[in-house]
Amino acid sequence: MLFLFLFAGSFIAKAQDNDVALETGAVKNDTVKRKMVKVDGVAAVVGDYIILESDIEKTLQGLKNQGYPSEDLTHCNLLGKLMEDKLYMHSAVQDSIEVSQAEIRAGVDRRIDYFMQQVNGDMKKLIELYGMETEGELREELSNIVKEQMLTERMRDKIIEEIEVTPEEVRTFFYAIPEEERPVFGESVELAQIVIKPDVPEEETQKVIERLRKMKEDVEDNGVRFSSKAMLYSEDPGSRTRGGLYVGITRKTQFAKEFVDVAFSLKEGEVSEPFQTDFGWHILTVDKIKGEQRDVRHILIRPEIPQSAIEAAKSEIDSIRSLLINDKISFEEAAKAYSDEKETKYDGGKLINPQTLDLKFELAKMDQEIHSNIYSLKEGEITTPILEDNERTGEVFYKIIKVNKRVPDHKADYSQDYTQIAELALRDKQLKEIKKWTEEKIEDTFINVGEDNRNCEFANNWLKN
Image 1 (cartoon, rainbow, N blue to C red):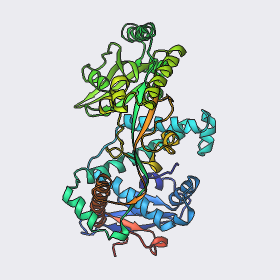
Image 2 (image 1 turned 180 degrees about the vertical axis):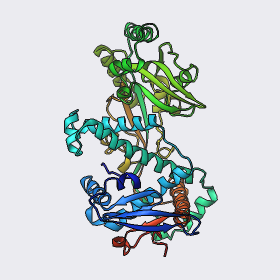
Image 3 (image 1 turned 135 degrees about the vertical axis):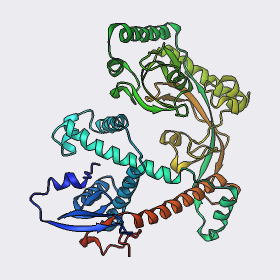
Image 4 (image 1 turned 45 degrees about the vertical axis):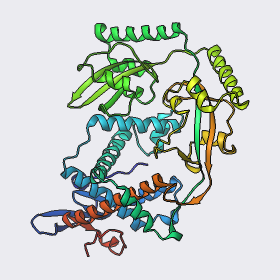
């Protein structure tokens, strides 16, 4: 959804037809005073930021369009949320938290890519849908939103970045909850899988390597822009429209190890030789070195996989499943012997939940495709072969999944559900820290709630009563 948030200066320039009155505000300690302009339609002012009544209405309509129950969306609650966001932004600027133009452009491109999928690639329809005249206007609007969201997120992250919970704090948190009020965790499963990938013919791999070498040559010797090649030929949907750009990666960025190693081995402007990751074959160039960060561009191309190789993978996984069903081999042994998924094969194919980092997957929160394949299986049962055609990674493979364990709905148990309880304890501690920070910042920040909104019952002390 698109909301327009305006600085005071830019808003005043558009206020020629409105009734204008001057109002003076000051921070609590009276050491700083500033003259603010109150324009008809201003709901509140937080620091240097103005919230318009129209912002609240746009927010309300946007949430309704997304299916939120309208009875829960009150004017006062929405205003309180917008004021929180502005307080984070105001503090982010004071704390010199920055968002680069490259990051904003990348964020806008990601949103445009997502929106375009919703309208079948029709840019004209997208522009009309959001009430804009041109693509430039749409991108400018999104740039404001992306910047503000990033500043808000980074300020929140800074507040809680050092918050941790000890086992004793987790224990205290859990046993402080009355037994009748303890959370109920939904049915969960523990899973393992075996993956069989089709073999890529060597000649197909060589074709890709030669294509990438020719692109490298065009960039280095013929003056062709790397970004142009990426936009035309890269098979990475996450960066193609940005000319292959990824901004601010570090050695800890969750990219393939080979990708990061190459990024940190190059000088600015240098183009790598073709190299391989699990996603395919790449060439990479470094746009900019910023201390421990790199702005890089890459081109990804994947070898063609012939249908005969896919059919051979299907035949292999059928044979493995047959051995398992007939108890000729255990699942753990089969995973170690045959699975092509190196992350899981040496642990018997066991899957780790990336959100909780334990073995449990709550059925209600599970990927829909996996859920549809395992929801009716009993402990110890194995799915039929599943063809995975991953658009994001370009991988095509077959897999079988075993249900190692099923845990029914149950009231939280300290020993059995420690990981989930620790998450709740951490979240509770983070929220308390954010609340404490918010209370302190409200006291130290110029805030003015419009007359029409002073009867609101806010969760925070915006009125400084």
